[in-house]
Each structure stands twice: as C-alpha cells, then as structure tokens.
Image (tube, rainbow, N blue to C red; front, side, top):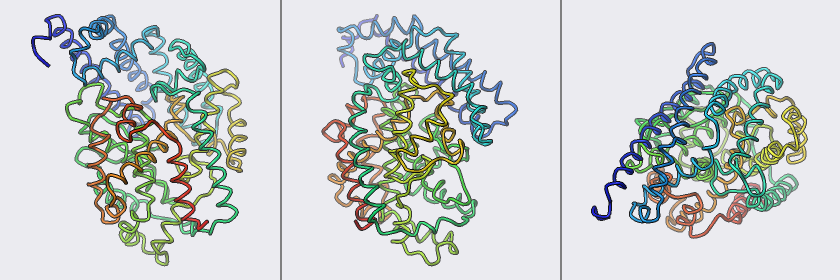
Length: 510
C-alpha cells in the first residue's frame, strides 16, 4: 500500500480507530480475567457485588463500541474510496465493529448494564440451583434473561425467525433455515447408527470406569499430556471449576478449567483435552492481531471445531491411546491392571445414551445439542416459557435418547450457558463437529501420515498444520470464508455422517 494513497483525514481516522480498538480490547481482556476469577477463585460472599462491578465495566465497553465516535470512524473507513486502500486486517476489524455497531446501537446503555449485572448474578444462582436440585432458585433469573434476549432479537432484527438474530451472535450468517436441514440429516443418521449399535454391536468394557480414580493422579496425568498435545503451559494454566471452560486474557495468557470427578475419570480427561483445543487455537493466533478485535477465533462454531477435533478425532483415536495408555496405566495400575489398550480404546468410545452433555459419547452428543436447539428456538419465539422447561426438557431427552432425567441437576440445570445469556450458543457445538469432520478429511489429504504422527506423539506436526491453515488467522475471515479457504467447500454434513459411520462400525464390529 503506497503511503501517498492515505490522505491525512483517512490516516487520522485509522489512528483513532486503532486506539479505540485497542482500548476496547484491553477492557475486554480485563473483563475476561474477572469472569475467570468469579468462576474459579472468588469467594461466594463477594460475588454479588463483583457481578455489579463487572457489569459496569462491560457497559463501558458497550458504550465505546456504539459511541458516536465509533459510528463516525466506521462511516469514514467504509467509504468505497477509503476502503479500497485499507489492508486486509483493517478491513476485517472494520467488518467486526460495524456488524456489532449496526446491531447494537439502538440498545440503551442502561438496559445493557442491567442485563450485564443480571447475567453476572445469574451464574451464582445457577450454581446454587444446580447443587441443590432447585430449578426454582434459578427460574427468576432465567425468566428475565429470556425476556431480554427476546427484546435483543427484535432490536437486532431478522428475516424469518427471531432465533436467527441470536444465532448470528455466535455464528455469523447462520440461520434456522440453514441449520434445520443440517441437523435433520445428522439426527437421522445418528439415530439410525445408534439403533444398529444397540441391536447388533459388540459390547465394550465400559465397566472399567465404574471405579474410583484418585483425583490427584488425574491432575498429574492431565498436566502431563497438555504440553505434549500442544498447549503452552508458559502461556496458560489449568484450574478447576463447576463447568469446564477456556478463557483468554491475551495470546500469552490462556486459562483452561476442568472438573474432576473421582468416580468418572473420563470427565476431566476429555474435558481437559477439549478445553486445550480452544486454548491452543488462541495461543496460535498471529501476534500482529493481539490487542485488536481479531485476537480470537473466527466464530464459536470454528472454535468448537478445534476443541472437538482434539478431543474426539485425536483424543479418542486408537493411535492416541497407543501412545498415552502406558503412562495412564502407570498412573492407575490397580484400575487398569487387566485392561488392554484395545479394550480401553473401545471403552472410551462406548456409545450409551446418558444425561450429561459434556460427558456424552461422540455419537449421541449431537442429539443433546438438538434438544437444546429446539428448546431455545421455541423460547425465543414465545412458544414455551421458562417455567415449563424441566418437563419439556425431560420429555425431549426421553424422545431423543430413550432415557428420563432423574433430577433437574442432571437435566435442565446441567449447563451454565443460559445463566450468562448464551442462548444461541449450543448449536456451535454440533457445528464444531461438522466443521471438524470436514477439516479432518483435508488434514488427512495433506498429512497422509496423520494417524502415525499421533501414535508417535508428534502432535507438533498436527498443530503446525492447524496453526498454518486455521489458528493464525483469528477473526480475519468469516467462518464461511475460512472453511472454504481450508477445505475448498462450504459446510457439508456428509463428512461427519461418514466419519461416525466408519468409526463406530469398526468400534462395535457392525
């Protein structure tokens, strides 16, 4: 780009835009740190006021993002003559801020602040409700959150379904019209394969997990595998929380959390690998995008593709356990004394309908997402109300998985997402599965030795490919642009259907 093209007015606008972008990003980083602290470290008695303080800071970020100054800068930078001379990264930054500005500028700041405080306090109410199996404790918060989300959907605007406005927050461009046929194809194939497994599948030794695995030893093993699979412990950390999540403060400070259960070693094991997928993505983003809106993943669905890819397509592969099983057996010699690596591999891939989404097997997981998707669509459309969710939830779980939750704790209260207003988030998980299968097909073409690399512990070669083709770009591209750039085509459900059919036909000897 020639310097003479940048007229003084444009140069000044760029400098102001960069400063505003940096300021918003700095504030957002501190908010991220506060969120992590509230969920991991903060004493309970201080959380109520803590939530109010965090809400105040969020509101300041919101005000900056929809300020007259931001509006004027975006107008200047999107003028055709000016836009033509901007570099690719600046255009992407303008795109991100303009999208938010156009959607959110009509939301009053005091409304946004009330909502931010509400969601901060709702997290504590959800934790208490979940711990005490008391949906009524959380219900008043949930009702208000749903009311706000309905209002936001109307303010954001949509063409066909109000839920589209909320989906777009997490996966830009995604609509019910796009998602329904994708999920229909996945639902049909998943149910058909599940029925075949239940009728004709050879059983696995899943009973090996029905015993105690010392939590301290689980922690040791998780910390052992993290750096090997690619997570930089000098640029991150691993802690405990009620509901596992990853939180980025900046590229050099990525926080992972997991949940340890003495009677369920798989929970923390695969939860940690999953969150590491998120964390590695963030650690690999181009440092040039740090302190800008581009310093995070392309979308929630693309982000989930990286965590689900690492958790399932790598972490649940036979080659992964050919490499790691000797160390796991050394860590838990009593529990695994008479279990071969093949038996362990089949056991960690056991397909069995269960209540908890984060502990669901790879096949039935998508059915959990579809339950939440259908509930959220109906909630936002006003077809159902929050007070009726426990019974609606239980019926849908029974319809999809053939089991009925024994309590709200393992039913409607199991997920944290609604407490922070994440209505529209859940489809990202199944989108992640769809994206990851499409990415797997491409990486196996580019790295024919893919499975051998895993078996030899050469995760660096795999992470280098992911960094080169996906991670480094941050938010530079929209999710659709990125998946086309990586794989040569738009999202295609066939690859996940084929992957699941091939894998579980082998695991269950169908």
